[in-house]
Image 1 (cartoon, rainbow, N blue to C red):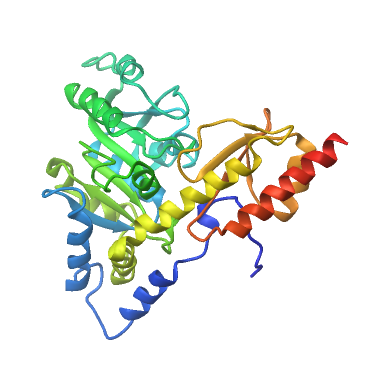
Image 2: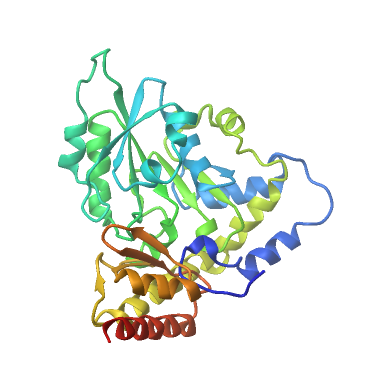
Length: 345
């Protein structure tokens, strides 16, 4: 493996040592498989306690699996899901919601990745018309794919719209920890009034572990079967549970996410006034979006991997992680400035 470090994704980061230690601690003796062991039950209860008295938790392997299984639990074959046009559901899951969950996505243009109640209401149409799919779920990302945040009040407003129209309110929380850390809220407070939450761990230092948190008991009734049929039931479940055990211990989830957020803020501050660069989105969590000249993008990506978000405009995305260091940020910021200066010479 290369020791190269970059800003491509928080998925590129290493596994937190506390998480590896937790896996090692449970790697003794035998335990019932598929989560039917007392340790997994206890960790499920610990995670659920963050989201309310009625919450139930189901560990899964990945974020797409968490989202697809959540939608399968909430929808019938003729139902549809309202989401932002930039939502991970819509642009980064290879059609899995349609192919596996069998639902139609009704995408809505957002403002910096965020939906508004008015935009959602316009998508709830032809109710009861047998010729049209029926809106059944409103899904938002907290934080969004553009690194922006819904305030708690904004989430409540969207939840109210959803529930008034009989929709299930789903929160894609692949980076829920980053949102909670940025807003100074608990995990439950950052997704108020949600019926189902896809709670991410992999992007915050875990090793392929996510959770579906079902807060509305009506959605949870058949979820054990849906998880299995969706290929998301781990046979050695205690090793997923151990990762969430570590994540919840000593507020590791918050410390890791807050650090990633702080590194993104440091990076944005370090390059904001660089000639030829423009920060394109509010920097509110662990993502920095900016535009760069094409030749500068090509030069930088050889040494510091990152994604080009929009090839047409030259918009790039730089993601910071739990293990991003100040030295990583400062070295990259200096390289950005040097590349811009060379391109302008």
